[in-house]
Length: 310
Ligand SMILES: O=C(O)CCC(=O)C(=O)O
Ligand SMILES: [Fe+2]
Image (tube, rainbow, N blue to C red):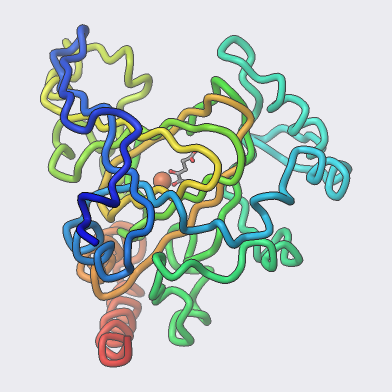
């Protein structure tokens, strides 16, 4: 079957509108696809580093029906959680997330490594979707240094939040990995910019080079950040069962439209290893130039070996 026949779209793909305040181009959405073969996904999206939503990658996960707000309250409600320096119970976070709105957004329970914090729940998000592999962060050569890899180290990270709350900053993911976001419950909007827009997004200085200095993207002061007007913004809305593929180097942030549960995972393989190596090298040069040399030569030989086997 031809790829064209498989494409579904949330919105009209080619409807390019101008944002009133900045003159910035906005693409309402990219492709949302179903029934795509692994080979087509790899060739048309992964290798081209083009974002896409896969609508059927996690249908087989028990989490899709099991991880309701009630499930979290019943099983983990008493668990203490610290968010942005404040203590809560998970029950309170779920309640606040259900009531959340623009005026009083709930604290955002985010970047929680499932295998470390909720190991018994790994069965609910298994088996690993074929589309997200191979993931070199899961290979034996990386497991010993997994916790030292900048970013998630190939861990599944959990996000629970509510309407009106945003991820706190615009960035692209460490360590130069691709990211898959699996939406388990609720709706979320992702705002993306291609890697070529980096100069228009005002990256921070030093080791935070993958984080933007821009704060509220709808209220950018163009007299301070004039290049932002040249950036091209893509908007992707995800709902339950969707998997958003964000290729390495794509800048992004997210805002929830309702109570939301998502999982994120970073992925490295032959399609982005060059990007991972260059990210890690750049980061290490700021943080620990002496250790960096040994660490980077380990990473380079590991990548070389993995290329032979996967
Ligand atoms: O889903 C979100 O809030 C964005 C998460 C994200 O981009 C990240 O953790 O790197
Ligand atoms: Fe991210």
